[in-house]
Image (cartoon, rainbow, N blue to C red):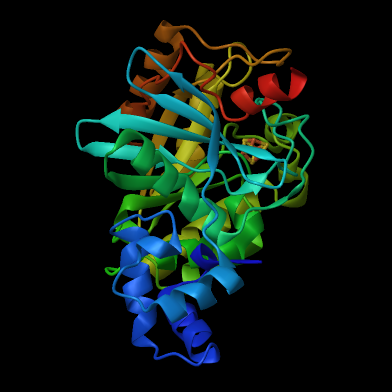
Length: 341
Ligand code: SF4
């Protein structure tokens, strides 16, 4: 059966027309789904019984079940959701002074094989549909009775490898009759799928683009991120420069510091050389140690020195606050643990 949350408003209008209904019914349904956050068609009380029956016969509501929930001392909450086909995905809720932010998964598993990621070793199973991405937000809002203001595509999966569904999800999130989360409050993080970065630049969506860079030489980056063999640093940086030129939007570069790997002065110099003059920001991430992972976290002293070097040389860099360090906060960790049980 079709998932009613897979459709953006325009598509839902067409679905309603195909059912022999007036298109404005789609707006009513959107409101029930995303503003009232109902879990059944029967709760859509301004819709006729006849239409409710038609909806029940043709669509599911895709309400996720919570398989596991971990709450960190700092308020970060990690969910493992049952996506109703035997698979499980992770979603993380983070609390900031400016509101609640959610880190959503875009795929079940991932093809990219980044060596520092807990999802590595979990085979790619399938893309999540738009409705399954949206449902992560609804399920968390319902469970915690709060409103999410920021969405980051940084959970399990490479969002640009599930391009169409991710873009459609953004249209659903953006809609003022829906969740009304502005594109400026949405970030897409990519391991560096160059052709998709060019494609994203052509969409008129002012979301934030984050690039997982993590190294400044192809030799080092390929060891950490096999995707670099397909799209080496020079091509990646050129696509970022073109993206900035086209959109006039600042790019965020993610750089996870791993002890004795990419955290020395030479690496910092390489980063300055690579990013000099670009409209960008660098997020330095104390790497999360994963079970059997090859990398360990740099010392705080190293991380601060690295940041200071970048800032002193014209690159705006900040150290990302570590959230959920007492729970399985690195993407894939919760799912990985549960798969073993
Ligand atoms: S870091 Fe992201 S892109 Fe890389 S393997 Fe993990 S989920 Fe995939």
